[in-house]
Image (cartoon, rainbow, N blue to C red):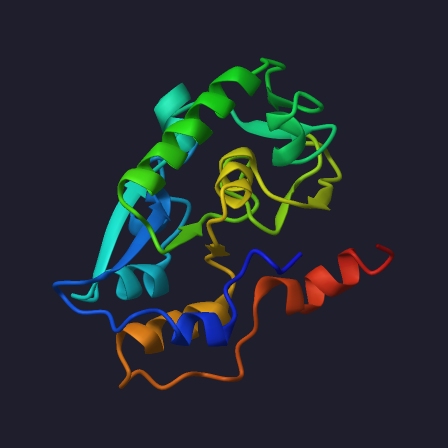
Length: 211
């Protein structure tokens, strides 16, 4: 799954980004350091995202869908029986590790994220991958606390709603696309052509080789 990513050519066609006319980015709050992970952490230091969104010609809107509906800390939600599109269509459920059905709250949070994206006229979203809300390429297939964690291709619920409305979504693991974005904002930033996006890495290629 890669058509949710903007191409290098699409990024180059973005208008010149200035302080007065910045690139408008919607970001999963945890990636910017907000302590909104299920355990009250930020899920690690995504310093490369922080560096990107700190540029003066980037305007960032932060949001955590899960915190919006369920607070922090919270139980651990995952999608069962499909992906985020399926949850939106009533074909799959969001269940916590305690068995609670959080589908309704997750859908409400997704619509709140969409409202923010539309109100702020975002150009692109950078979201936390493998999240039941924000995942863009990969999510857990059922509860991730099972002894043998399983994965599936597809987006989380909030990412799916953004994609359904035409927004491009990048994850913190899409390093090549993030390099193109950084170079667009700062032409003096040299693009590291050795890095790859998530769907190109060895784990992804191996895990989903049969699909």
